[in-house]
Length: 232
Image (tube, rainbow, N blue to C red; front, side, top):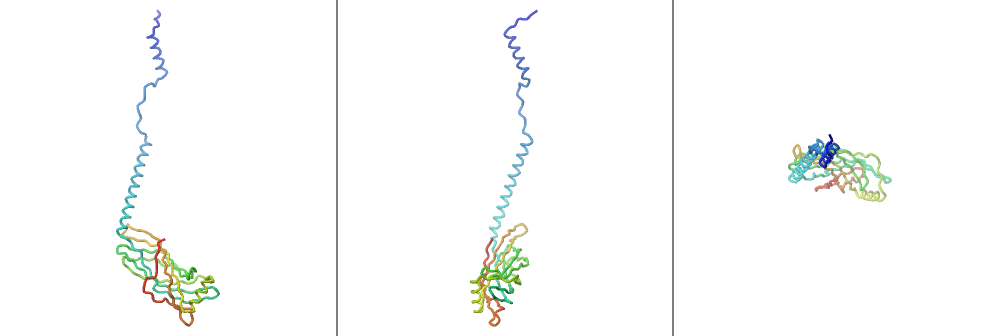
């Protein structure tokens, strides 16, 4: 017995066909965040915390130094003795013994001096150089440092410098320069420290030579501090 083909039957067949062609017709539920997203978020939070802590720590250090107000150490060439000094054919050589007075003017900060190099020059020509022993200065402490500078080799002067030096030597004196390169560490307590590089310039140190041989000389008495410190 055949069934009549009506419009309702056609609609039912069409709906069944549509459902068979799209078995996943219903929408899937939203999936939760993946582990990767969670990890990235945690890393960002960690970086933010670390940066914040660094900024806070740096601010605390800066404020502490502003309160302490670290002062530059004081240097003075207290003695400069010259021996075996000779000038000939634009060449100059000699042996230099220097005594440097060093003062820590800070009441709450200790000073530590490393990589301490010193040299003696005439104008722009370096005559001798040496490395000094590292040392430390407690709060408000003053000490002296002695160094013996031997000439490495003969040094040649420019013609103008040679003429100028000869004229001064005939008058019985020569002005030398002592220069130092120092790495200084400022330390307050066990955790607060700051490292600075310094160039110390002691200019126009007048050495009086003996009237007989002109080969030995001593620094003229100088009362005031004769060195300037420049941070490099």
